[in-house]
Image (cartoon, rainbow, N blue to C red):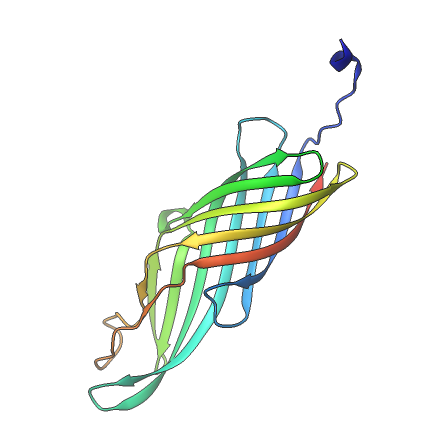
Length: 186
């Protein structure tokens, strides 16, 4: 009887926007974000999208002529994810998982440049993440998040486009993106 007399103050829809402040496998500056749409229906997952991009620069030696070449790799990781909001009395916890593959216009793409010649490699990626948020007034929430993205190591010098014999340079760019964000509910 008591529950019938109380009015519900649940949100109808919420929009999450997160900014990536770091990625553990990136050697420098990171461009990253995560967005999502939340709804109040239980047991039906919410949907989102994650993106992170960074540049890795290094020099390698070509063993055939002992010349040093500059290697620049731009790595872009994109996933589509599903998540659940788990309310607690003081904080909100969000847990989710994601996946990226070429047929979804997502995944991992590395573009490596050696002597102005580009090589493009792509692979699938999986993601797991969580956010811990502090809600205010039932309409806004500030949160911190961590997105772990996992995929196989990539040989960034493996391409028929590169002239010469370059040593194998395997990179493991799997890592975690730390985010700060806000959710606005309507």
